[in-house]
Image 1 (spheres, rainbow, N blue to C red):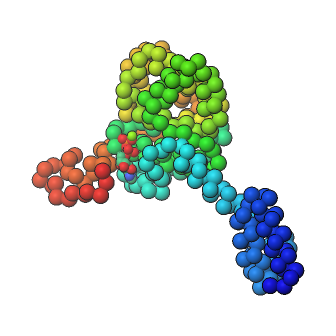
Image 2: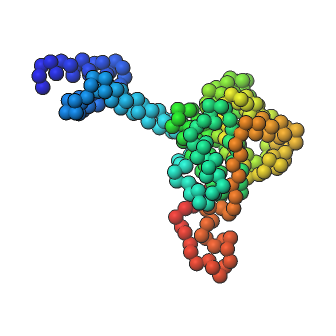
Image 3: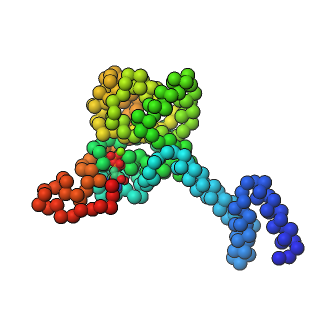
Length: 264
Ligand code: ADP
Ligand code: MG
């Protein structure tokens, strides 16, 4: 290396550190060789270096947001077998672009157990994180526990304000357990505080007509459903549990010939 190149590398090392962009150092050197070989303009070279940094930052930001979301298991839309739920293929593809988050629209996934509601909710959550949105996932029971704690500590408004800074909150398994009156009320506050501000994805085994018994009150349930579905896409999943597919459980015993142990 010439003394001048050596000097430039030293300056770059310092500058990349000051910008907290250590990756620039590596790409600057590598791309400089490529630029010289291919006769790039200075502008092309600078853009290429900055592009590497921006995409690396986006990827690591998405990764942090996915890890912070609390998904439990990582499921992706790419892993979802839409042949099992062809009716929601188009709707899901449209939602995957993340436009609903910019409009604070909601998504409701309804259907019997094992039809992929949680899988799709997490898959959409992963996409949202990749589009730059902060995401939090929990079951309805988990959300109520969190809000109850905040309420008892006298910081429910602060907690709701904090949650509004998340572009997406996923509430899994609404209706799996019925709520006490206080819990239903807290849940209603969560829904109200996000209404037209930020998105919710909810999953439920019950149709909306069954939500009155979950929230212990038809009026509360109706007011909540009204806010949720005013701006929402409702995806209705159908059929038998994907977990039980090919296990012969929903077919005749005489044709129970294939057993698939690949998924639990
Ligand atoms: P639900 O929440 O509706 O009860 P899940 O999303 O938990 O169902 O799905 C149950 C299991 O089956 C999960 O492991 C999920 O990944 C898988 N699964 C369900 N539907 C599909 C599908 N269409 N393609 C791939 N995996 C699926
Ligand atoms: Mg589920």
